Length: 292
Image 1 (cartoon, one colour):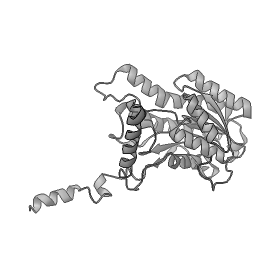
Image 2 (tube, rainbow, N blue to C red):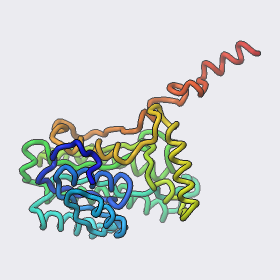
Image 3 (tube, rainbow, N blue to C red):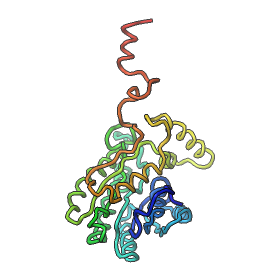
């Protein structure tokens, strides 16, 4: 079903491709686009999850098993979407995972390369193989042709993720900027979304948990996320989905080459700047100046 039941049909007649659509942010975004009238091509490596996404929709979702590390899989996805509908209007390059968790002084080349392939190279070739099907679409006349890429708050500061993930997501931001200039001549906008602490399975999947242990870990993460940022609730996949729909819509027709941070205020500053229970530097200095 649509994740925004009060929305209209902003994307009626549009062809939308969403990667990583079997769960989390990708699933929520595929459902939201379909709920607003788009024909959605939902892609993921997880066939069971894709089927569940399609079954939950009150719109049109067509699925394709796709490993975004394999560029031929990406090409086949984009070619199919265009062949069945006449072209592509919107692409959400979202597929990803936590990547290699080793610190920079321990990571091995294979782990580094796989993380970059999954999180950065896949976005580059998602753009590369979609654009030939986006040129000349009617939507390019009114700001509706758009590519949205998933970056992260990890791209703008250390400490939010493993090192390789952060570097890849920073690369997605720069790729978004340069792609926006390259594709402006075709009337195609390119933007990125930067999620903060969102309650999805990216955390538990990175730990390779299962069964009751995974359920417990998810519950702990959900509880923690309520206190991780100024907005006192956990971030949800639909928070990101609605940001993506805005960036893809004609309402954002003057937006390109930039990113939208959706993090509940996580990156506004050190915790003491918004959490009265967390002492700041001046409060700590006062303790030394005025000993008990």
